[in-house]
Length: 215
Image 1 (cartoon, rainbow, N blue to C red):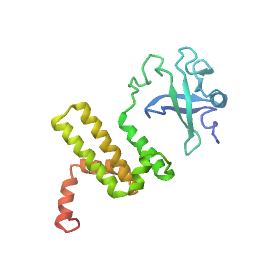
Image 2: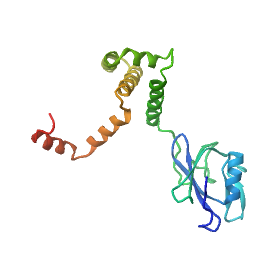
Image 3: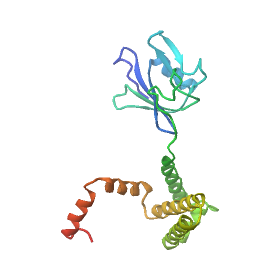
Image 4: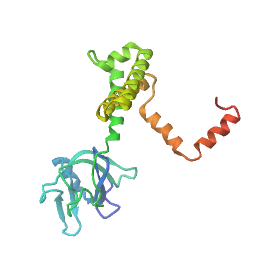
């Protein structure tokens, strides 16, 4: 990786991002020695501008930042470092240096699940339930979505919240499998919902329908 340390008198900014939650945790500065120590130790090390020395984040508090991935920007003078933090990042005890909570948003798992199902579709490993669904074809996959949707409705009207969540999870999983079989992703559904969230969406749809552009 080529890094330009010359633009800021030997320093470059390093943006620290939680690899799981994708939240930005802090911003620090590195010189070449700090970068090399980060690579070697797999723990983020900065150059302290106030103390004029190297410091590994967490060497006092124990809240190390374990490196997962490092990316350079287009100008080769700013790093994005994804990490797994051991604890709060800020020296004031907060999760981030902006006093924000660093919690994982479970909605992000939908993309992880989509990627997992995509991999199943590509590799089709034997013994996998997902593989068996793909092998049974679109009609059976669509039927499973309908069955799980009905189970969700039943639990919503005559069951418990816990069982409804269980059945809704089954429905969503089978929907992602069906989408994958059609070359689509759950993000395509999210994008459609995003379009509909626009206050002008329904107006534009009515205009298009009046022109015969859609049924």
